[in-house]
Image (cartoon, rainbow, N blue to C red; front, side, top):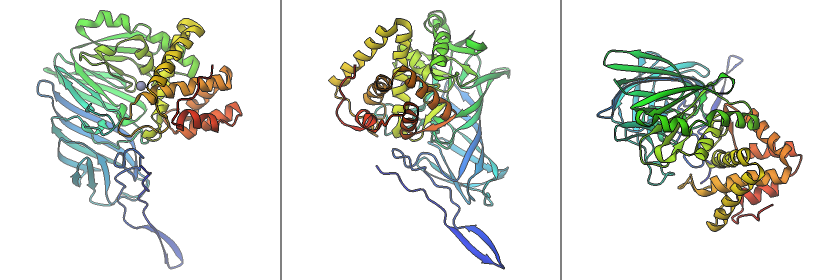
Length: 460
Ligand SMILES: [Zn+2]
């Protein structure tokens, strides 16, 4: 697919009485951001600053009701703008306290405020809605609906890449990050585990409201809550970092044991990549017979079958690569998965030295050759999380390390992280850092590993 051109408003120069007046023709915010994989995800014309997601959940029926309040800054004059929102009933939308017109077409929600919003102005949109959320059948994640999910008595959110719009209206693309407040009300005795720092728990009698704050920029796909019969287990990580884990009450003991290396992993990865990016970390484990896990920001989520040491290391490392440094567009997904796969190998190296690393990578290489994994730099848009972006992506980093040497390699990782933290990076951004630090022309190297069909020869 080709990148779709932005809908750029025409600038019209009007000469009036000797002064130049710049007026804009139109003023409709674009309904997409031209992501090569997802034309419609995200919206143009504004930059979100803060979301407040205030929802009451009836756990028994899976029904939700409440508001999402979005503070945003207009980057052009807006006569209308779009949010992405899938399903659910909207009863009202207000822009700066005045009811606004809106229309819906699939997941595009178009909002027309009573008066245009001027470029540069910060405005507040409140969407009031209710209903039973339905997972989003994302075209890139075959057969696994994403977003708001419910299994048995447990409700949880796994949104990567497009599922955030199944539970709150948002600018659904990693390139527009914002801070968040979660105010989630559930009946007693359920517990809410939300991304961000837990700041309050309000007792309303029959219900409780769990409040948490995400004070660092976050892509909407990494916003998540889980609701269940959880016990919260706190420990203190390196440099006083709060690690708060949410485990199903009846498995708390064994899971506390399974997640006990987390603090040490944070130390190891901080030494290799740079300081841990956020003010809190932890895991939530949901009792579903499911081997998946996702690196929601500050609170990775694990199905019960996914709890193992290397998956724990994988999701943790995504806090640096994926969450703090997020892909510029979804075809850069190897920047998430290749890095997290290589972080598993780095954990093996920490535990067992050079042999641990080599054994780990050799096994991946065998699989990569056996499966003839294609180039990770041009993933299949209908199968975003394919083996190549993980294994050949991870091997691209290992091969780079063998090519430029340990010192340059880790300086590349640290520089890349420092330069793009709390923001986004593309594959070209990473290649540029690698060439800058190594002072080598690496174009043939990256061409071979990221873009050529054939699996490259093993370089050790
Ligand atoms: Zn991953």
